Amino acid sequence: MNDELWELLAARRNLGLRRLEAPGPDDDSLRRLLLAAAQAPDHGQLHPWRFIQIPQERRPDLGQVFVEALAEREPAGDDASRTSAYQKAFHAPCLLVAVCVDDPADGTVATEEKLVSLGCAIQNMLLAAQALGFASGLASGGALETPAMRRLLRLDGYERAICFIGFGSAAPARPSRQRPAPEDFFSIL
Image 1 (cartoon, one colour):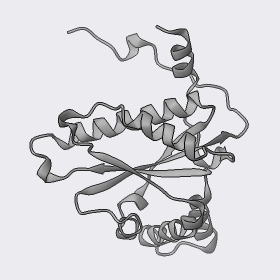
Image 2 (cartoon, helix red, strand yellow; image 1 turned 180 degrees about the vertical axis):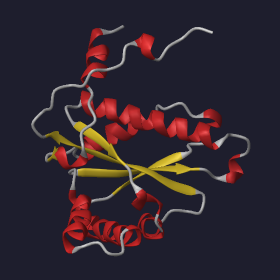
Image 3 (spheres, rainbow, N blue to C red; image 1 turned 30 degrees about the vertical axis):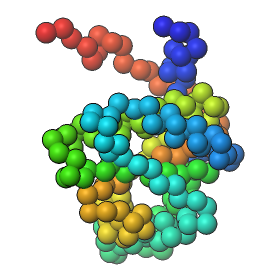
């Protein structure tokens, strides 16, 4: 295996979005990340995913969606928890939402295959970000499933927001975690 590729794979870490600082990718770097996503396997060439960037000027809208989602989950939430929910929208200098496009008109390709394709696209982006010198992280949560989020993202009925992807520069590095050895997850039938 090419040593540079192996070093890239071994160095990639998921950072919490709050640990991603400016600068994030510029337009050219973001385009390169999206080109990396486009290399993902895609059974039937359906392109069963897309990415939505949430620019800084729209982060207050996202913050409001987070507050609404919190109010639905915890109607008795206090001001501190609402403020915390709102502030989550401002983590990561570059913030994308990964969306699975599960159009029933696509025929016989299973939803699971579409999700695998999206996962591969995301991983390609994470590795490309690492190669470009950026840190990255994924985040999910119940807010992705809310009607308010669907409205904000303008999702079609057959689309589903899967996760947030943040890109930026790494805050102070944490030690790397122990990765599983192949014998921990590999067997021969």
